[in-house]
Length: 255
Image (cartoon, rainbow, N blue to C red; front, side):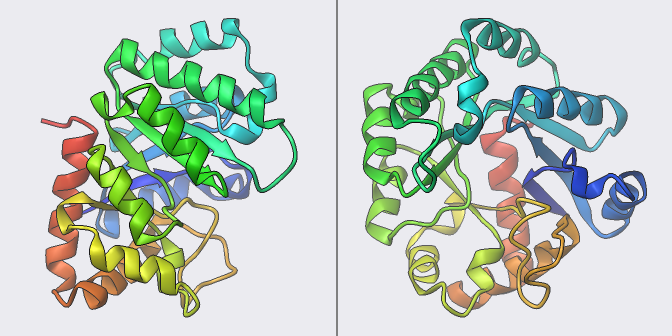
């Protein structure tokens, strides 16, 4: 069975066929899915999916690009709903400096606040970090984020940066980008990261792997990612599937 650790099935890209696709996932060997909140609105949609589908769990949080909407009232709402029995993490949270808005200080403020929330609730975090490695690391160290642990989603930095996150006890979400021919840096990082710290994800509907690059992504593409990790690690896809299943269970605290 395959554990999908990061998808956005509440996204409007799935409006035409969400129900039939989610039913198809289980038939296709996807045993569990964690749907990830990115805004307060998508957190509400995630809660609805968690309620409807037994194999769908959720992470609730506000993506750095959406932090301009956050307030202490929003944090209180997140605190209340993160107590849901099927909420397994706070996320996705972090920093994204690719675009100029929201301002860096706004992103930092709410990244810190959501890290504090995760510690208060004793939940792992799902970290989004894009073109912001130093500030991400500095804030995580300052807040002792390793106490809750979590996943570095869509890891895109060097193997040297991976070492820093490894030392903090984090896991690494590996998605479709690892199958791209130009993903040399990521392939090197995956080679260096121990198998017991890797989990697989799609970030659906984004970042479909080869041979479906550019199309709408979904969890049925996870075998392509598993095969690429296996090739890099020089082990069998079955070993990668089994290890990433157990790793995801561990970080998301499934018994």
